[in-house]
Length: 229
Image (cartoon, rainbow, N blue to C red; front, side, top):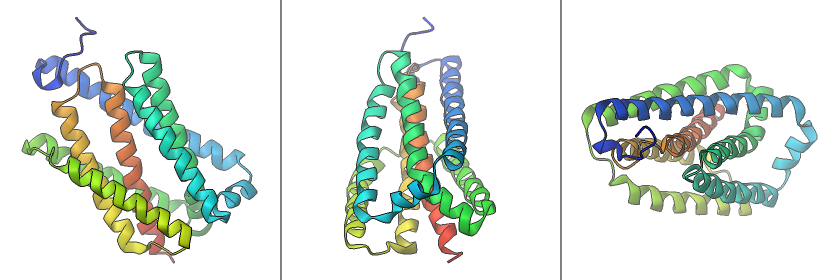
């Protein structure tokens, strides 16, 4: 019975608590793995390669395209019946986010110092904790955010592509808007975890939260860095 995939909303209190514990444990491990992989990349990847990643508009678009395709694959793997596939999907997501973050982490360390990373990380952590508390303690239905996230995702992707092609800076307001979108994603994904996941889908649930947290961290860091310009 321990391996039965029961809908979380229909599970017993013990089963539900076990699912939440595993989900957030896997999320924490994914974040720690991200920190470890990012540290290795910063130390091992030559500076010339990092600069090359930022040297051309179309190079960055290519990287974003590969990231998008890889994210689709990792998400699919994370919900595979095989636990090995699920963990491979989560691991792939960690690697993808680490690669995408590499240039910005490099810039932050080079020009703004490590303190800005700590400030952005703590801000992201407090926002995530607050958003999670809103879902669990208010019992508000956040399923309506799905349409907003889909539309907002396509619009923001279009703006990013156009900005990369024509080389204009998206600016502080875009970063603020994307931070709001990432916050909405955390609300929605947490609501889904409460109501629509099975008790054996904790790896997939943690991946969804991890992606939303990384997106929030990305734009919080951009906002903090823009204040140093």
